[in-house]
Amino acid sequence: MANNKESFGSKFGIIAAAAGSAIGLGNIYRFPCEAGANGGGAFFIVYLGIVLLMGLPLMVSEFVIGRRSGKNPVGAFKTLAPESKGWTSIGYMGVVCAFLILAFYCTVAGWTIDAVGKSIINYYHGLDKVTIQNDFNNLMNESWQPILSEGIFIFLTAFIIVRGVTKGIEKFSKILMPILLGILIILGVKSLTLPGAADGIEFFLKPDFSKITGKVLINALGQAFFSLSLGMGCLITYGSYIAKKDNLTSTAFAVCISDTLIAVLAGIVIFPAAFSFGIKPEAGNELAFVTLPMLFDQMAGGYFFCLIFFLLLTIAALTSSISLLEVPVLYLTEQLKISRKKATVYSAIGAFILCVISSESLHDGSPLRIFGLSVFDSLDAFTSTFLMTIGGLLTVVFLGWKMKKSDFMDEYTNGGTVSMGLRRIMYFIIKFLAPVAITVILITQFIK
Ligand code: TRP
Image 1: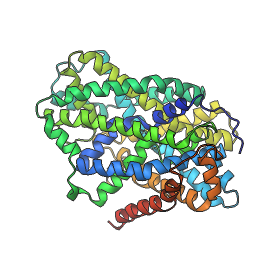
Image 2: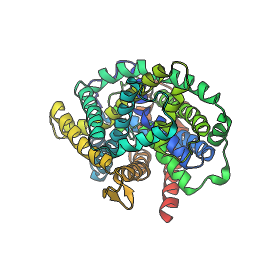
Image 3: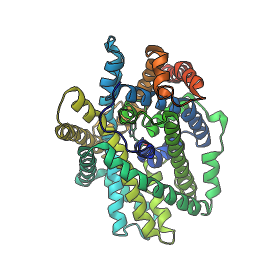
């Protein structure tokens, strides 16, 4: 199928863009929260297994579907299975899911922007833990400040989207992701030398197999899909921009490895420091937004590291939110023939409204709750443990059972021009192993 729209300029460009989508708040904010709440080492080992056995194959599947069809998720399923309309619901689910994820994602991005502001004025310098904790709680209770930072963040996302995905993201990610990696390594070294750091590392890396429960499995699955940007059509959208000559397996490998590396490094930075400062691993939001400022304050050049780090985190969040907003935008432009500019403005306004609801729901005593959880937490849990896992399941089922095997192999091997030693194993995993494993995890969860 012809793919004559813009495509990424180089092999490294697509890796940078997909890694840019994957690497973000999910790695540095959400991964430590999930690992901390789900037993540390037990979570970590399950997480690694899931990335390899389900994340990687699902990523390949999304790339294959996107590049084969050259379309947004709704158009992709329409093109690849024109006679059975049901499959397009995966695409629609993705469009809805993008808004729901954006709503809480932008809330967290807003806190990050707030941290940038505080770093600039050297606000954190010399503050004790309780003060930073109180400030963070106060921020959540403010009415205007979070809305302002969220607005700035969504505006920046929309601005880059209007200019077209491939040029903007490629340039950003290529330079900034390696810098983020470098800074995390420096922070890791510092964190590991703090008094009491060993307990944090033991918690994070030493698996206690008796702690692997159904809850750990579903949360690790949700976190893996969230962190790799899977299960809602995001990488189908990016797949549609991949050039026909690029190797899909090595691209997916590179993205999975870099994303996992950043998450692991984030754990190595955060847990030793958190243990050293007396912040509990279940502390959630505070793991990133209280531990890190305290860590910087103990470092030589702390002002500089703090500022650069939160700036980079904002940019990492932007390259992720771009990939989220691109899903509805590409849907509106390709399926409903709306101009790119209008599609972006409408989508950004929609995301902003939801985001305001999500952040207002974190006010003390806010009535914005669903089943006892704040809207913010509900959106997070509902998308990652439900919508995205179902979306991922349906995607691998589509590829394994609906699409012709010869079509899959043709796309996967670039028309037979690259020999893929792994192709049979990959196909087996996509057709049998991944669907069964995801179903089992979902069922154990539902039975509870
Ligand atoms: N993966 C990103 C992160 O870790 C967030 C993200 C971008 C995402 N696109 C997505 C999550 C699609 C789920 C689905 O920060």
